[in-house]
Amino acid sequence: MLAARIILLGLLAILLWYCLGYLPTSELADFSVYREAAGALLRGEDIYGQGFRVSQRAAQLSLGYLYPPLLAVVLSWGEAFLPGGVPLLWCAMLLLAVLLSAIILARLVFAFENHSPSVSWWRQCPSVWAMVFLLAWPPLWDGLMWGQVNPFVLLAILGASLSAAQGRPAIAGALIAVAAALKATPAILLLPFIVQRTRPGIVGFGITAVLSVLLCLLSPRGFEVLFDFSRALSQFAAQPLSIDPFYDYGIEKLVGNGPAKLVGVLFVGFYGAGLFLVQRSKQIPESRKLAFGIVMGVPIMVLLSPCIWFHHLLWLVPPLTLCFIAWGTSEQLRSYRAPVLSFLGSVLGLSLYLHVIARHHLGSGETTMKALVPVLIFAVFGCLTAPLLVALCCGPKEKGSVGRAHP
Image: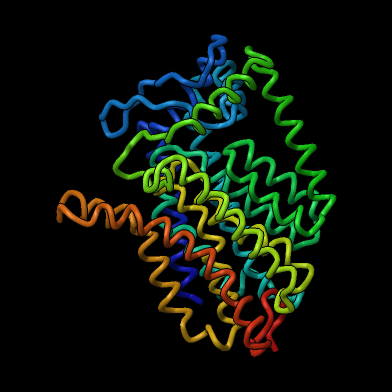
């Protein structure tokens, strides 16, 4: 426990320096695209379908804005009123998002461990190690390097999961809508609310989605920005989206645009089947089923993205963490937990560097890496459903239920 806290404090110190001391003066290519899109909005331009000239490590890039309009709209207000301070403010907000995500992840682990209310989550070893896992996860640092919006999406998803575990489905649904307003694919995480007929969560999602649309209408383009986004979505659906053909692990790049749509439908079907298992499960208390269903959908959310970049794997921290807890409650799976999850975590967490070695130093294995990453992402989903399938087929021989106190 002492070792975990020492490592955590060291990682926090590095994170603080990186976000406030280094990042504000670096190039932050993806954030630069957000700023360029915000500036284009202020000029009344269509922010989609044009390449913005930015740089990363002194390399000139032309990148398009590929997100729902809300992010550009909010940043346009910063560009209008405090243009010089926007980079520092963005980096400070990234730092805050990561810190809050670490705390919420620890509390989510604590909720699924379900200790006595008199016990502090901060004093529990699994919670502290969960924070260490997040802060040591390589995709987190890759996303920070680019100034990516991903930490805010992670924060919204974790907040939704913890709110669901605490019996606040309306807030959970609202936070899923916030995540979907930043990146479209988290909208799939509404599915557990629908399957479980959680009306407050659906209403919370709907109200927040409407508010997000109304905020977008405050941009200089008004309603037109929504039509711009709609046209961009149709273009993205018509042909595979490709910026960097070498390190994009999207399904479209493996099988083509048409087959990828069919694979996407299959992924959604698997997610629905997994949610059915959650509903049937006696290993997960009713109060935890919605939260489990949200986390279960995260690997599917990643796989449905038209592009899968290394920094997207940041979102796999909650499902991998929940896998560790769930496998520990299964007598049949407990002995396999360390090797299986260590393999998944190490290969996914280092996949970019393994790909670089394969491409630039070995001259082979690049295709294998491109195929292996989505396969392992789906394996994370499979690992979450495995304890439920084992309990269904073999009977309840678990040490303790997921989300229930251990004897």
